[in-house]
Length: 72
Image (cartoon, rainbow, N blue to C red; front, side, top):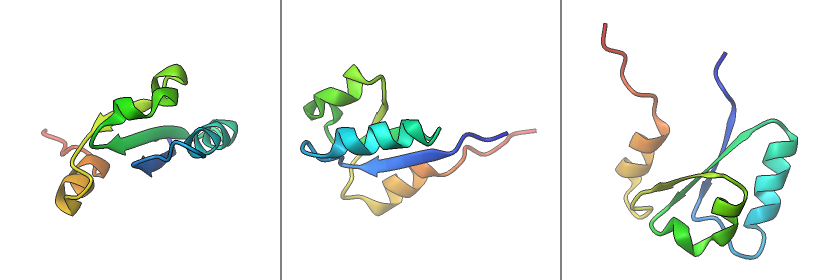
């Protein structure tokens, strides 16, 4: 069964942690997409998956959120 995720794009410093904690309470897998994830210190502290991506590039965001192709 696939995991359900909450994707945060450029999480906020003020309430991003609250989104992460709420996602975890709902059994969601939080994933942060950010041009510079280290600016959000709570991501590492909470063990949140953080992916460095150009958040001004819609195609890059779509690629990160799309499943990898299956090669049979």
